[in-house]
Length: 248
Image 1 (cartoon, rainbow, N blue to C red):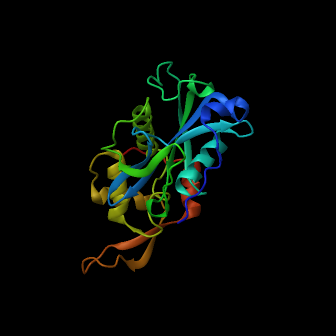
Image 2: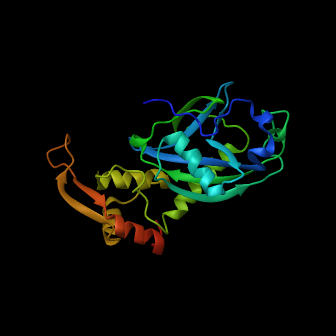
Image 3: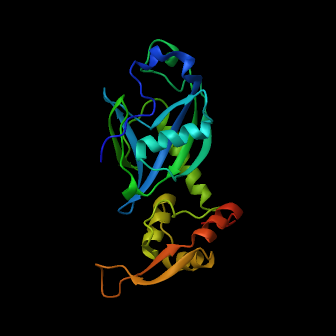
């Protein structure tokens, strides 16, 4: 796949662009979650001089903050339709100790707005930007040291995602279009960081009336391979709006 050029189209260093292009003191950082081989992943960038960080960027003058996050996510993943949620604003005066840029507007204090996104791993083609040498998936339980307060941002995003399971279904944006009940169970267990009772989980998920059981079994497995399911998109969206009011 051909490498996409960043929408910033920068031909000069950031500090030379000035505040004519971006809002001063405001940035966006995105925690992009994916699920692969029974593991929850997070997408990270590696700067050309070594340190790792979250995908992020700055807000253009003509953009809303949400639109800026959507643009950044599309640049990193190539996806348009992404589950995206703003979850916290990080504004500690000392959050950027050891800042890389030493001059210009970019060297000043920034408040960052945190978003988390849920994407289907297989559909993502990670792309670094002009300041980074790599954009890759890391297991959320074994991420490397990150710049500034980015580990805190990841931790709070994961905790927010866990709490959201009490109010909203999860899976449409993380699993393939067809999946088995054990795969859905594994997703919930991975997010929650705990084991769940298989029978109770299946009973609870079916009671939500958001799944359609298919007359197909997963291929390549045992003789009694599990049946495949898919989400009923209309009912799933309704559950997202109305909430579930349950506890795991």
